[in-house]
Each structure stands twice: as C-alpha cells, then as structure tokens.
Image 1 (cartoon, rainbow, N blue to C red):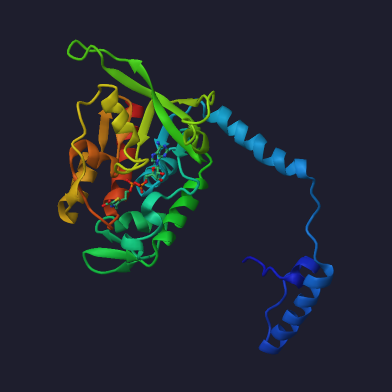
Image 2 (image 1 turned 90 degrees about the vertical axis):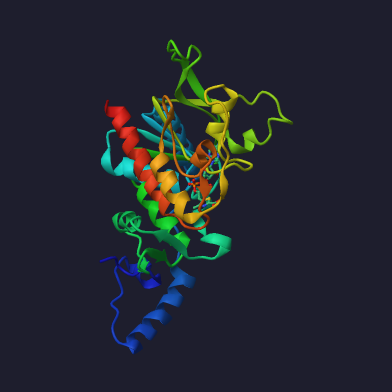
Length: 313
Ligand code: AHZ
C-alpha cells in the first residue's frame, strides 16, 4: 500500500501512522510546521530539465520515423484503436499523431457539454476491459463523467511501451507509392504520413520555409472525426488525389442507424489506409449519432482487428 505523502513523511522518509482523530490532528499540526521549516525539493540544474525532455523526444522521433502503424487523431476512436493494438501486439511500433495539445477529441464531455457519457450495449464490454466504471441502464450504460472515460483510456494507452503519442502535431499530407492495377492505372497505396507541429501548420500562410517531417509506415489508421476545421483530413486528401471519387458527406442524426453503420463500415478504404470513427461517415454518407460513444470504441476495436489482419497477411 502506498505510504501517505505529507510533511512528516517527507522529512523522515517514513509513513505517518494514521491513529485516532486526536493523533491525526497532532500529525497535521506537525506537518504544517514541517512544510514551513523543513521542506525543500531535490536540487536541479535547468539544462538537466531541457536535456531530460529533448533527448527523449528526439529519440522518439528517430525510433518512430519508421513505424508499423500510424494512427491519425487521438479521439475516442483513435485511442480505442491504440488500446487494442497496444494490448495485443507489444512487438509493433505504433505512433499516434494528434493535432491538438490535448488528446481525447470530443470525448472529454458528453453531448451539449453535459458531463455524463452514454454508450449503447454491447460497447460496455470495452469499458470493462479498460477498467472504466459505469452504471447499467438496461440497453445502455452511463459513465458518470466522459473525462473519466478519456483519462482512464489515455492512461492505459500511454503506459504501453510500444506506443508513442505525438500531440500538438498535425498530419499535413499522406506519403504515397504507386500501386497500379489494369483497371486503376493511377492507383496508389498509402505508405506513411507527413507531419508538422500544429503551430507551424497553422502558419503556412504567413511564414515560409517550414518544411514538414515524415513517418514511414505500411499502415495508417485515420480517425480524424467528421468534417470541420480539422476533421476528415485523410479522406478529403484521398478525394483531392483522385483515389476516391467524392465524399458522400455525413448525414443528419439517427442514433439507431448511425452507430451500426460506423462499426460495420470500418475498413481499409484505400490500400494502406483504414478509416474509422466519424471520419468514415464522410466517406459512406452515414448518419451522425450525436452523444452516444459506443460506435467510436467498437470502430476502434474493428480498426485494430483489420490492421492486424492486414499486417499479418
Ligand atoms: O484534433 C482532432 C481530434 O482530437 C484530431 N485530428 C483531426 N485532424 C487531424 C490531423 N492530424 C492530426 N490532420 C487530427 N490529428 O483527430 C481527433 C478526432 O477526434 P473526434 O473526437 O473528433 O473523432 P472520433 O471519430 O474519434 O469521435 C467522434 C465523436 C462523435 S462526433 C458525433 C456527432 O457529431 O454526432 N458523435 C460522436 C460520438
């Protein structure tokens, strides 16, 4: 059991025994004195902080420049995909690229900024696996705060040694290779991603010479959400590269049809590019589901499954 962290503990390096309320009051009093008189952090030099961060970041850039799988977007679908991959395959190098400083996409809140998160069954199996508590309401379950779901899932994903999250980093383009067939002479396959720090991506209009970085990978899983200022990035690029004719466009809200369609449709859309979550609604013309997140996690489970099938073929 973890020792309590308080002033007396810090001073003596020993846990304070809990004892009676009167003992506890005395301990608290002693603690307050300790904070004022005896407390000090271990020493550090500023350069040690810089080196501790930059050394690791640049080692990660080096390691993940050749990845096995790149996940674009760390929303509920992308994080669920990463969780399934990390859990099953510690041998694969998985890079997650998230444009925002804060991973999690729209899943930090329920709908309309209400805090609870709703998931229809059978998605509660995923919550059980990750260790997120929920209340059972019959056909659906409720997590008391969406942030509990996102933070728990995120902590599990980030603790896998073979997964690196590059946040504040945007996928600006896709790496492609020719893959012609007799019927599709201009067909390509996706072979990685082109990235830039998001702050740089946001300033291409007023700054020059800020060339991007790259990650080579045989498989990219795109989960960038439905169209918006950032969303649906990879599938929009597939259209502008002539690899899919057009986007059908996300349809209006219908919870019942939307969730099944997203899970069933999660697939490799173009060779080397699996699309999941709400980005897929733009490809297939699926309905949106509003604030019910079961399809996002199960689309993530399916995306991971599809990826491993392709990877192991
Ligand atoms: O920042 C984006 C977000 O965190 C990130 N992203 C988008 N474009 C990117 C790019 N490079 C890197 N070019 C990028 N990252 O992708 C994440 C998408 O998360 P999301 O929560 O928007 O999508 P999701 O499909 O995981 O979950 C959708 C949740 C929705 S939307 C909806 C409705 O509108 O009805 N209902 C649900 C459940």
